[in-house]
Amino acid sequence: MSRMTDVRAAHTAELGDNELKAIRTLLDAAFDGDFSETDWDHTLGGVHATAWEDDELVGHGAVVQRRLLHGGRALRTGYLEGVAVRADRRGQGLGAAVMTELERVVRGAYELGALSSSDGTSGFYTARGWQLWQGPACVLATSGIERTEGDEGGLYVLAVRARLDPKGVLVCDWRDGDVW
Image 1 (cartoon, one colour):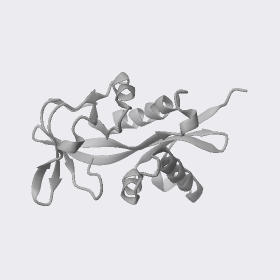
Image 2: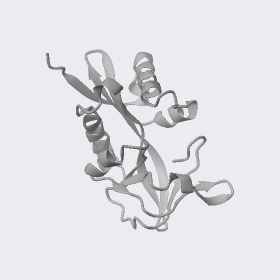
Image 3: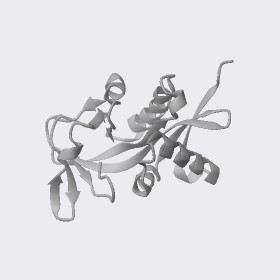
Image 4: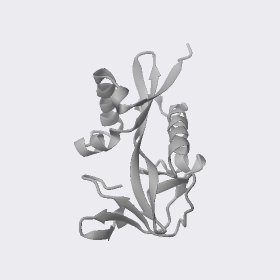
């Protein structure tokens, strides 16, 4: 029997408690328990794309607004957070379905899309047109701009209306937890 997948987009404010619990449960499992409270906080406040099969959540991703600095400009950026597919449903197009919805939001509302990728997912993003950032990565901390070398090699951008030099410096706004 073929499963029907329903991909929905909704702002955090439109999601009910049960939906938020289902998202958090999926993310905890997908990230093998390495999804912290600050990671969860970073996922909230934007537009969520959720993939449902009947009443089971099988995929999720969110776009939240951030400001990235590049080339002397502050760019309105749709930053992807909490992108995951349930382990037993990976490789079946659900990630692509979630990303299609997230990219629609990014292209419609932002100058730039950005994300920090975990190991082993780079081919997925580059196949969709995301570009690996090749230049230095930094954060605008309280003491000024600080390099975040540990994040380099895992940052991807999707240029929408912004002109980018992919070997230039890319600076993210400060936040608790992982800054990228």
